[in-house]
Image 1 (tube, one colour):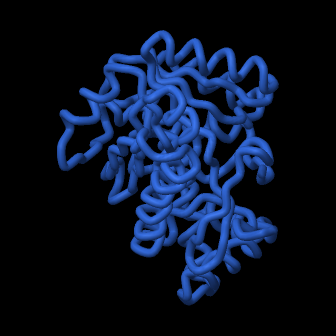
Image 2 (spheres, rainbow, N blue to C red):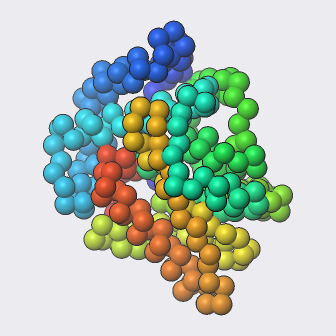
Length: 284
């Protein structure tokens, strides 16, 4: 499922120039008027968020809608600025050492469209390569700017728009090379990968593909949630899952997925405006 991409190369370039001249605080407050523009024109987003807040059982009004859009704007800006100036960000863990230990070897990293996931590659602190399996939806001019930042990232994108065969080969090569493979757990790229689980009181579709890969190849699963807690500051909450290989595949995979979905539900209830799935998540 895709949502319409907004923004342009010139606007991203303007943000970077302002950041270099005036610093991050200027960009942070610039997001107030920028958010107001999308508040007026992004009607499709408002409809989907109304459905989301109904499932939460939380109030939804124009003020809440505006703050939700502003959070999205901040996390998207951070996607770019973490690459230009990663040292200016703070990522807080309960235990920094454990993820680094896990990521030294082939691991299935499960991300979600929540909070600062787009800056998550800069939070891992691992020297190993992280291959993110996703549809690279950035417009050409924006992607060109991102690639020109000069930050030597250990992240690679496996673009699912290349087709299932090419993607499967790239994923297999990554794991055989003992690298980390990151996959979005809350969106499946094809119908066969969808699995319905109860989420905020109603069945919603999640991506069972990373869990199946972990089961078949006997690789550990690390679930990451990167939570915005302040200006250039994120808290990383993670869960390490060891699948029970003694159990039948469907049972073991469903149990592992339920751990992920339960944690996800707790976090969206606690940080509702960091939900970044701007479509009807429960649509059949």
